[in-house]
Length: 421
Image (cartoon, rainbow, N blue to C red; front, side, top):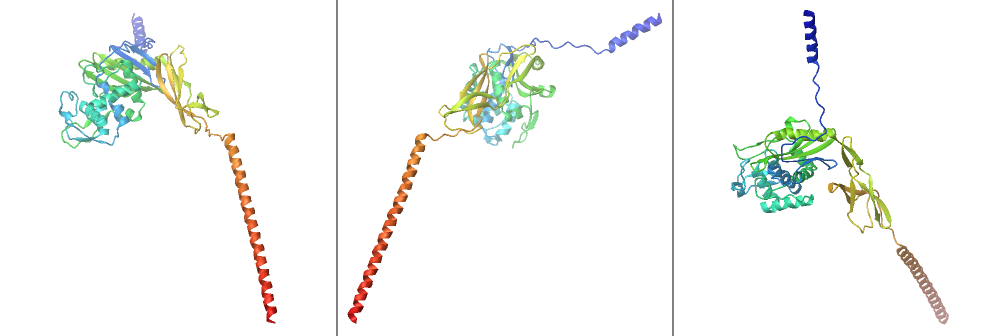
């Protein structure tokens, strides 16, 4: 009996020592508790997941992605910004702040750290007034930028994301705004910064800016973007991540609580594990031809065109729309930009890539021009020869006259000498 008991115990111990077998990640998309969500592959621009992707939501402080992008594109980081009296307008500036005061001066560089790490609403207003000249003008710039990105369901009313009627976007639009911002290397440097100390002349004011995106410290693949919260918008999160050479951007809006972080990790893991991105056309590929004068050149892509597909599935080829910069070009240099190619997947434009010339083309002289040059050259030579001939004749005549004159003078002199004898 003891032997049997010992044998059973041994078997139980061995069974308990075997590592547990975890379930393989499902190919189905994860359950996202936020009311709106979106996931895109950065390189191909393709949509990998959408939940109410075209529904309108308040974006809260994820608005600051657009504010920061415009500040970087339109401003100079070394600019010194003098804060206005708007800092005391508590209907415009409230919530998260670093307590900027009228007349205080700070570099645009440091204001962006306050904006993108600490999510300071007063920094958003200060940046907007500096870049746009006024809040209204800057908000107009935000909406123009959204239209330039091809977004039709986004309307900004302020640069901070504080609740305001009509200040709305969609998960799809916000993902595209984040994609445009992520393409800017300066913006990427900001959003991946976990902690930064800014310079201020006043004592006893916040100077240490700490990034509110907790996933930066908790997930090794997340490399930035922006959080947001208001009572109306609930919890909002945009996250960018990089793994094994691929890059994703996820958006979750109107989530009830902190589960937004685990939901975002599940969403990003779904994108990395269930999709593959490959090069459809490498950089330098001849995308189209263009006629320069009477010659054809190849239009080469300056960067690769990617395609993303779900594992085990096929994907249709993207549609390429060529947009030449000019049509009446007669001369071009090698590597000169000659147009762009829009990459479309279905009904959505997922990328725009510049096209350059594969060689130089110089305008050729026409036959008429060459004929005129030959005639001109013949006439010129004939004129020179004629001129030389005339000058030669004149010189000979002068010599003859001179010789005759000398001969006559000699005869006269001889006659005079004879008379004297």
